[in-house]
Length: 65
Image (tube, rainbow, N blue to C red; front, side, top):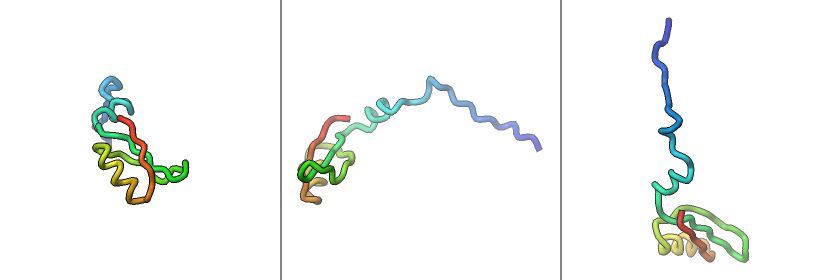
């Protein structure tokens, strides 16, 4: 049997990683204890980053995505 369905993807329609990060928004959050990274993740705001790090007893550092 012949399959005539072909998926064509235009390269100009694809989003790059940095473009996806801008769409997602929020902050990159890094939680550390004594200079060691405990956990990283995304947070909607600084308060959410602080809460995430506090749960691990860690200090939070965050930057815009």
